[in-house]
Length: 80
Image (cartoon, rainbow, N blue to C red; front, side, top):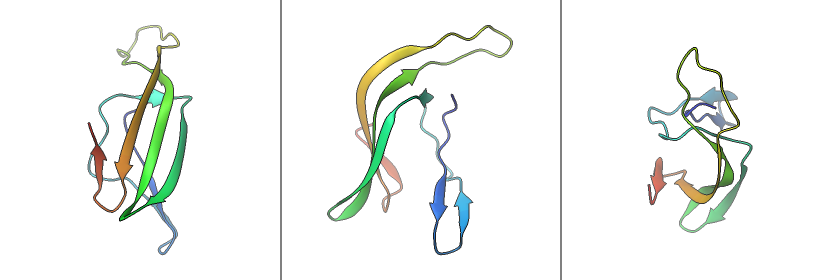
């Protein structure tokens, strides 16, 4: 339910939080990495989205069927 992203660096054996964040929190989604030339891509599909105010009861959010793609080497979301 946050709009953050963490990447595991296998070389240094550590989790890294990139400087950027995606602006729409999403959870209960499907995702996978794929070697899509010329760079690895991270695909995120569907799930629940929503923005919640502090101190307000939360609901399940809204379901979405959108596909988002992250270019791992370029460190950016494609089509955002």
